[in-house]
Length: 625
Image (tube, rainbow, N blue to C red; front, side):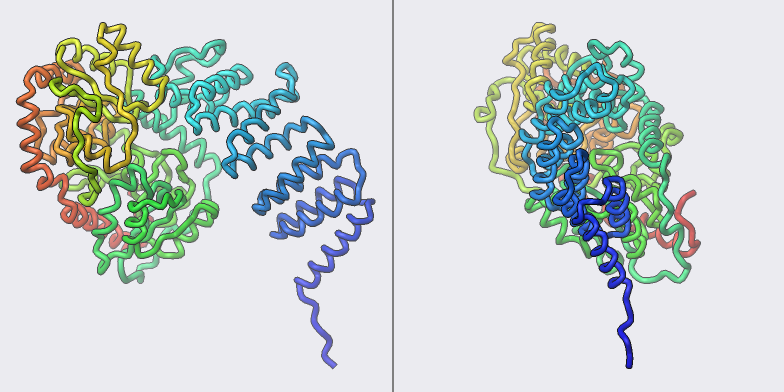
């Protein structure tokens, strides 16, 4: 007679039932419960852990039941059982009113549901129920204060966000993440000078603000390549180097054959600058030679652009709900030869995927126009204009030099019906300067230069993007200080992409920002036939528009100092016929220039990727120098 063999599943079920029976008895001590639930979670049995908490809470009258309810809510939330998690947190708060940790987690749960007011209310309750002078409450107050700051910034309530950041720093000045957000928020608000002392927090000095500036914010704060490298290296050290992942695939065997596999890594493959620039490049890849993958954690915005991007790929991998380590193993397992990072150190960056070296060749492109200092990223796509020899010592990557402009374009971008000046509240007979760059790219020095230009060209206006009221008020204050009538600053509301493109044909001259040049916007401006005046500096980002102008055939619109920039802008404003000649040139020759030769661009970049990938296959190394 054959007896049934007990399986590990049977043993686990027996164990769980025994533990549940003990929990239902009402005699299990809380420490025992916490140990057992943690053990179940660590073994991948989160559902059993949640069940155990529920049984214990129902059967036990411990004065510490609120702790178990809080933990129960956390487990349920991790299982995406949000309604039950909310009930658990509410039960914890009934047992222990003002229980700060439960309020914090309840706020995060509401945030995940996009219930913004409810989330903010929970975090405010933490502040209401804790004492500012009690050291025991410091960490939970900071958590609540920083959540209020972060979420209000996302909701574009910049003034409220700034007040919470200031209050948080007053509690604890040494918070690099808060300082980083404060600096960039000041940039968005055009709160000049950006590095002014924080009111009431003398410990946060201008030097500490500078050192705490994020890599992205530093691109717009200074043209010093050493400071940009410092900001990138600090990020790489704090987010990656302190806990470096184990390399998942350091090399490939020499026998690797078949199509070269290119993987694009990004959270921005939708209606975003990266998506707008990269879509036709993806579409034109030679699928006879290359297998094109994307590893994406961004949202599906339902746009036609998103549909084009996904349709252009051999395979689209959603990695939003897997860890960086899992994503790295996925990339390595697919045998990706060249992994192209389209994110850099911008919002949502997942640098740990790259630092695990899942591909033998890893390339930075588009997302961060400058060095990222991410370990494992060997190369950066460039041209000899954006990355001259004197810049190389300040970059951790080797340049992949393209024979044409580094920037991809989209010749299929939809353009709305032609716009007219009257509909855009622009005077018919004025010389229209324009700068539709994001407001965080505006510096006080550049804006004062624009005001001096308006002073010297009385029949001119400056057309700007109405991004937020605080930036707008700051700009109007600068106009007042320079004696410029406020109606000479014309603010445009945001528009749908096609309509935005159509109105780019209206200005006489686009004024570029410095040190953070226009990128996608410069491409759009030139595509629509409007000249752009730029100032090229010492960094990749400050030379972007100059590269576009070089390859579209208008290098005389590149200046190399702020004084030269101002002088040229005034000359053109006083001689509008010159700008009309630029417009005629762009209308006749711009779209036929090498800047917009996308088939040629794709052939060039594929040749570079193929050379690197094949060398890595033959040599069996990780592609680094």
